[in-house]
Length: 362
Image (cartoon, rainbow, N blue to C red; front, side, top):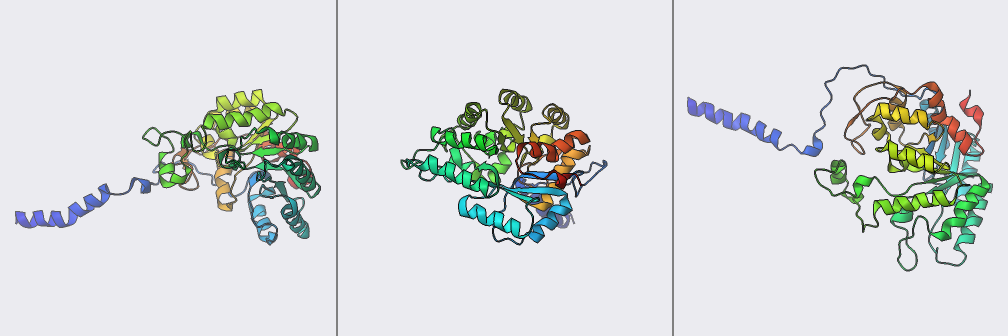
């Protein structure tokens, strides 16, 4: 009888234990058993401008579907940062006009750094920006490839503060358009991939994001180059994308805002950093309420509610919208209406030219 019981346990219980013990850590994601009030928002309290969005096919896109999605979220204006420039940008703005959506959708232009060694690269870049602004560009977007992957004809990495680009920053200031710039990636991508790295799971799931001091340059070097152009061009307005990768060090970010009055910030893809420090983040938003813009980065309508919830509610211990940037729970900041309005649209109206205030004050 004892042998039969032993055999039964061996065949039934042991396999269950083995399966439990061999579950991949990456799959461990238990729902919280905490019972607290929840306020899942599908629309923002006030109309908002998303200053950091990407739409790669807008030149030919049927925009009626996009507007319906925007209306469902209470998005007043969508800022497409992927304007490319030249004829490509004009095709986008022409398509926007075709749908009579000039007050709802706007575009930033981009630059190609190919041929930066050519004697006429700088003058051509300036001519392109002037042409793009005449065709409706509201600003210039600089991708993280500047500093990370863009190289000159000799194979040298192009610095973020390369002096050949200085006239471009100056021209943006002269034209009164802002420059939104993304430099580097989160600092943890440069740190050793070990048990002390807070982004270990993200990097394990996405190994292509790992960086090092030689791949392609140290994090601090890239960030210093970015700050150098802020310092060199005080008459140009900059929007530092992703909170300049200092959302986890708001004291440092505040020091930078104090040092560079021409620098503003947006929180695309870093809302989880704010949601895990709601009291400190709320105090930061109060102090720098005139310098923060709403941004989300990649356009996925289903992800906006997480941003609304962090900004507007006092909810506790809720998850990020997907297993991607953050594997921790968040809390709402419950920002007052005065600050919400500034973050959602008032700061953008002041910084970005040509926007229609009526869109936000229906």
